Image (tube, rainbow, N blue to C red; front, side, top):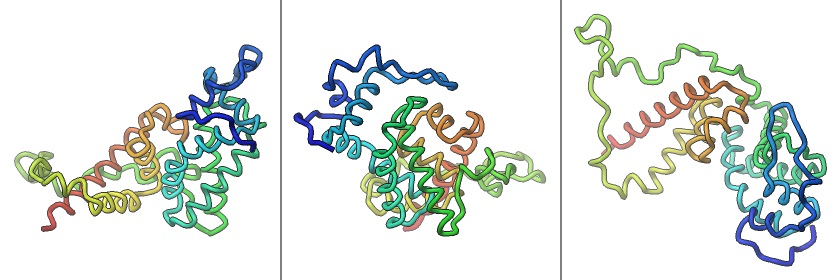
Length: 246
């Protein structure tokens, strides 16, 4: 790609500085899901197709870390995940001319990553998460919280907490924010079932909306909500055990 002649602060800034020829004549194509590219996205796509290196570098800077985290949700091996991300960017470059605007540019890029991850997982004989799983976890009766934490049917107040979850207000802030705690959280997420791991990665780490997550993963809003609740409950329980270790 040719080097850009300016240094914009963001990818959208780069798009806004694209040529004015990108306009009504490049209106977003109609599609079955009703998505319409914004003017900024249209200008950015045109800029990338023109071979502007600066815009592409900024795009990589914006999404590379997120792509790597999602790749690890598929295959939690750093070296392999990094290779998947590299393959994704190669796919983006080669596929730009075929991008039809049937989704946002971000969603399109992340779908390339999932395709690369599925291919790599099959090649290595690994199980592939979400895309090859049913819409819902096979264990539909899986409780979000350990049943032993509630009073049983033979007790007076059945279904109520045996003991309430510990408040974290008393835990020193430096411990909560420590690198060790962060690493423990990452380990707890890595240990989740694939479908739950992907949902919590997109929602709580990447900050995707419920609508974006449902569209990307092809699940209903209700199933997405249950998967996220289960994932959060398991991570919280793991953290409770971790904070209880003195």
